[in-house]
Length: 283
Ligand code: ARG
Image (cartoon, helix red, strand yellow):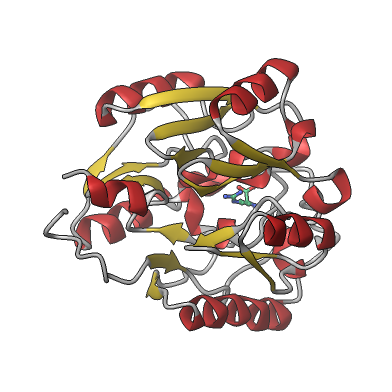
């Protein structure tokens, strides 16, 4: 067992409250300045998610919100965390590049070794890179570069399986794919090409498909805490499928964040790693 991470350590998740959240630019097809988020409702929904996570034993760490950085709430995009290393994101859109120094400082101050990609390599953190067991699944093309993902796999010494994202509505991997355990995941097939689907199916023993209308309600954008799976409302079929597979689904309304193209998972960054269970077994 890793002595610095005792088995009883609570899961740690980074969140940033939505005081300055809003739709101030349009960098994905969900965002329209003419369809503003209700900030009061966003605050209520954000606290609803945070409270639910705390009730499941999660320790929430906070990043201070900053004016004029409306997407800073989406902490999943800060970095890819691997043990004590954090591969800092380098955003495709200049609007979000302004968040990078804040994520860099927070991670450094909290003891992570921050790794930075070359200037011409884009990468959007846990939004596009998720572990199933010790394989890193990486979504590329719309936001992150496949070259970044190859480099990261070399840095971290892990296997990477890069899958192309083909639908602009599912522009980050975490909008269409979510690991549930070291050998299971949910996914929305319409977000991948045929070969990407084959790669996922042949490498993940239990792969649960999500239907289109539920994927459009961000059902794949789930936060997993042990056997608990937390999503936005509007995914009754996925709830049934999760229960059948032995998980406990929870829904919490996140409509205001969907207007920015995000939901439960996007609002969180797991600091002890998405595959914490697997890491416990290795030094
Ligand atoms: N408006 C943000 C963007 O387009 C939403 C980010 C959602 N984050 C995520 N991990 N999928 O960048």
